[in-house]
Length: 367
Ligand code: GDD
Ligand code: MN
Figure 1 (cartoon, helix red, strand yellow):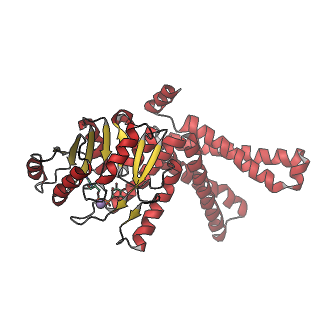
Figure 2: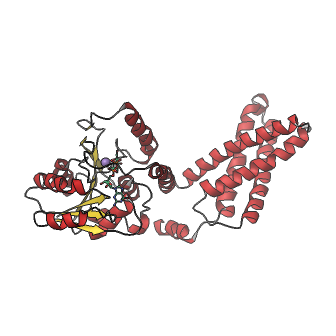
Figure 3: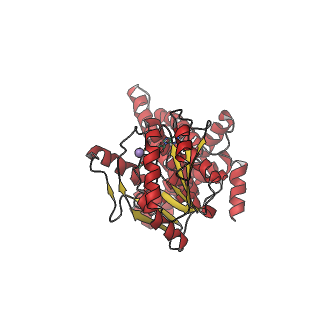
């Protein structure tokens, strides 16, 4: 049996055409349509009761934790079928692709099948403006390292029920539920089937700017999940580079205010190190324990001072004892910076931003 999960919010006009489209696409197959509705109060419930006389459809009304992704995740629990399909209600996703998607799961040809606009044979609605196209392309780009699919933004997918990650491993932030399941499920065989994406005719899009901003947080979490320490190191380095700019600006400003360069140099370290600490707390290590600010700041600044000694010590040693670096001092500088940053990162990662218990138990479970 195929369970088709459809998240909805105020889609009453689309429910009948949706049921018809699915019915004609899935003739001869056993299926159920589960409407996961966020208490739309637009007559969807009454209409579904009516439609249920003709189609295998039911509606689940949700009153808490509104949102597309949480609705879909709840839908997984309601599904009775071995095969799960998730699609939009607004007729954007062609139901005629479902048989092919499910067949690929059944034959073992694929473990996760995505309806894709950007593979050969797929297309988008003619009405798409260049602006909308650029928007979609820009949003797609940062998701590419996470999967190998061409259309990671798609919300149309099929997967075996048994392969869905556990609820506790899914973080339903934002609306990219396909991306979430794809990355967390770590599927061996992922495939894409071409779809023609049709723009909605009835109702309007529910995707607000705030939903789109959640996408950035979602991406960060997925990078964290997939690349672990590498993702943390990358962010740490990014923060460090921004801190270098703070250092430089303060150093120059203080001199403009009449301070000597040595005093300016000694002072500018502090705002820069504090800046780094703050950003690492709210970004790089925001999934770690929220220790007391003053203690953590102190530890971070101390580590930064030690890191600078490592940086300088490396530079000094290389340029004093290694002839190569005496001629190419810039390389010694770069190696020093990297060593210093490596030192800082290690200390921060191991001691300053403490892991929460569930992160530790996750790691030992994987080992
Ligand atoms: N339960 C519930 N709660 N459903 C919601 C909510 C919500 O808060 N917000 C949106 N939905 C439902 C809509 O009713 C619709 O069935 C589906 O989710 C998609 O919402 P749209 O408002 O039509 O979004 P879209 O067309 O901009 O986005 C679609 O296309 C994107 C690719 O361009 C979705 O399929 C996205 O998942 C997809 O990434
Ligand atoms: Mn839509």
